[in-house]
Every structure is written in C-alpha cells, then in structure tokens.
Image (cartoon, rainbow, N blue to C red):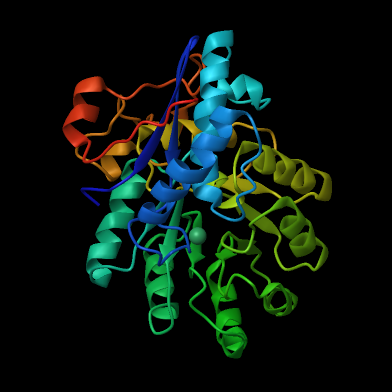
Amino acid sequence: MREKEAILVRALGPEGEGWGECVAAQEPRYSAEWNDGAWLVLRDHLAPAALAGHASGVRGHPMARTALDVALLDLRLRAEGRSLAEELGAIRDRVPSGVSLGLEGSLDDLLAEVEQAVGARYRRVKLKIEPGRDLDVVRTVRETFPDLPLSVDANAAYTPADLDHLTRLDAFGLAYIEQPLPEDDLLGHASLQERIQTPVCLDESITSPTRAMEAIRADACRIINVKVGRVGGLDPSRAIHDIAVAEGVPLWCGGMLETGIGRAVNLAVAAMPGFTLPGDTSASERYFPQDLTEPFVLDPDGTMPVPRGPGIGVDPDPERLAEATVDRTTIRSG
Ligand code: MG
C-alpha cells in the first residue's frame, strides 16, 4: 500500500491536545464501517455528545467511537504526564512483530516477500488464503521455510461446507488458522476446532467482551486477535484481555494499516501481559513511503519499541499532516 485515507480525531482542551485514529477503510468491504459514515457519526453524534458531557446513545460504529475515545484519553494522559502503556498495565517495552502478506501477486512474488520478511527478522509470517488459493500456497511456503512461524488468515472466505478441506491445513505446522468462516458463525468455528489440530484464531467474530466469552466457552477459538477499533475502544479491549487471560487463551494485536497514530496505540495494547503472540504491527515502511508520525522501525531482533512518552507517545508531524489533509471540520462546545 502506498496511500490510505484515514480520519484522525484531534481533541483540544485547555490542558492541551490528544489524537485518535479511526481504522475504518474507504469502502465498507472488510467491515461494515467506512470513512464517510464514520465522518458523519463523529461530526453529528459522537463529538457533540462528548462535548456536551453526555452519552451519545449511538449504536454500532465501534471504529468511530474508538477514534474519539482514544483522542480524549490521550488528551487526559498527556496532561497527567502518563503513557498509554502505563495506563493499560503494559509489562513489555518492546513487542514482537509479525507481517501479514496479501493475496496479490504470483507465488514467486509471495516467496520473495516471505524471504524479505524473514531477512528483516519478523517473528511470524501470516499468509492470506481463500478458496482456490490455499493448500498449494501454504505447502510451497512451508517447504521453502520449514522452521518459519507461519499462520494463515482467510478473512471469513470459507463456508461450513469447507471444513474437511480446511483440516488439510494441519499438515503444515501452522501457529493458527484465522477467521476461516463468516463472523457470525461461532458454532461453525467450534465444529472446525473439533476436527482440526491447528488452533482456530478469531478476528472479525470478536466484536465485544461478551462475544469473546461466548467464543471461548464454545471452543470456537483457542487464540484471539484483538483490534481496538473493531471492539469499540480500549475499555472493551482490556475486558477481552482479562477474559482471555482468565481462560488461558493467548492474544495478539491485529493491525488495520494504521498511520503512526493508530500504530502507537497497537504497540501499547500489545505490551499488555496477555498479548503473548507476535502481532501485525509492522514497520511504517511496509505501508507508507512517509508516515504521519516519526516512522516506526523494526529492530534487528524483530521487535518494535512501545512508545513511552505521555499519552500515545507520538505526534503527527504538522507539515506532513497539513500536506496530507484533504478535509477537516471543527466541532465546538456550546
Ligand atoms: Mg484477520
């Protein structure tokens, strides 16, 4: 990816400013939320309610709500001189990074990308799969890189009719198979987990702490990918963390191609005790020729440092931000 449209929320108060990023995309394809909708719900509902000091009553729109919540929390933490990592009870100052490789391009291109990720010392490589592009691809990568920590992510591309086919992935020593079935199909995932040795990891299905508990109790997953925007903010992320730790389910922190603002939040989340698997928070250079913040760089041991400054610990570069801004609106109290 070379370019992305993102909504940033800047919260301004007498004590300073705070930043949050909405991780929705330009089109409602990966998730139901999308930027034009998020813009309206932030402008007309969420921000006015926050300024008036009452609950918005808005249903849904977790990514938009997260952007505002993070901006308000960042404002408060900066004023208090405390970091988000500290606020979340983080126990690591660096977190292991993985990469997620897409479906575009040929198998040779993919092998070259895996080679590059291995060379950069990423701790885990995740391959996107879909019907018709799965077993052969995974077999080839596995044969070329026998010891590589490897996982697959189907982004809900399969149906319950594919369960037998999916069990053939057991041959490749995968760390997990992520979200093979549609997001509302917890029982389908439980049926798969019953038949497959490879742990099932849920991503899109985990929309709330309640849902996480249901998934764990149904044995629909043995690993959870937390995305702060998908679950509606840091409080629900923390609740899911606590449930998973109590139930013995390992977590990792997913990515949504964030700018440095969202990336900083992901690193703080991934530093919490229950996040024991490498996340998808890769270096900025994998996504953008120039990030909005100081670029996040992968260290030679395959980890990234958790920002330790006040709040989220990073700021957008004012010039870079001005250059990249295509629209803005201000919502004032009163
Ligand atoms: Mg995923």
